[in-house]
Amino acid sequence: MAVKLNYIIAASNFESVRDRIALILKTEMDNQSLLRGTVQTPPLPVIPNLNYTASFYTERFTPVDKTEGNVITVDLFDISTSDQTPVSQSCECTYNIDIYTGAKETTTEGYYNSAVKLQRLAGLVRHVLQSPYNDRLQFANGIIERRSVSKIQFARVNDEQDAAFQRMARVTLVVKINENQNGITPITAGGYDTEIKIEETEQGYYLTYNNE
Image 1 (spheres, rainbow, N blue to C red):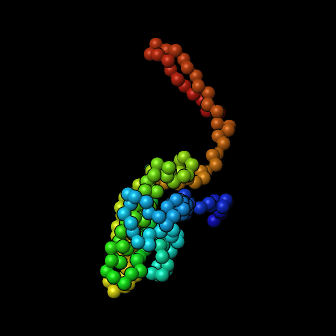
Image 2 (image 1 turned 90 degrees about the horizontal axis):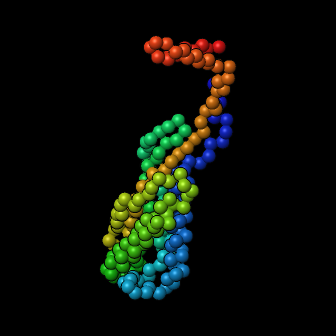
Image 3 (image 1 turned 90 degrees about the vertical axis):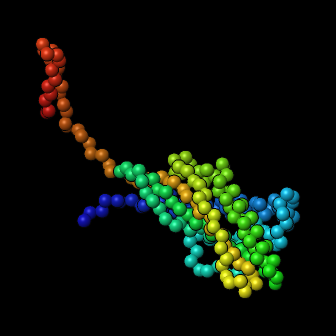
């Protein structure tokens, strides 16, 4: 069988979007860390040991250890397709942004401190992704149709005897993406000329044609 796609197939847009989400979040969270420093100014309530820096991963498969501090992973969860043409297709892609954090304390206050720190970070992620500056995730026009944070969930990672009080949140982002591909080179229709003749009759104009 002969090769038909004799060109290098580039990465899909849904791959680029996954990496762009991680890059945007890292850039903005690092900047928040610089803007705030170690001082939490009013009206924010004071959260012990809060920091906005995190380690970022895409498609991480190893468990997050409690000693790693703030960890954020970005994974592509699923894709639904629609509106197909020979050279394009709309893809509704779901991305999971998982946030891990904890509060190393020896009292039950660690439960509270870990929870409110996680909620602050989840709120920051939601704010960044829903910003008007990121309505197209900083791609050129034509790639992203829309994006929306659809859900935020919270859970404990380890049992209640763990002094690290590790918790995690999942921010679900749905992105409508356009995927395009090369079309088939059209066949030249030269040599198929049509001669149209119009004759006036009592019933009106009469069309005849001759192919040559």
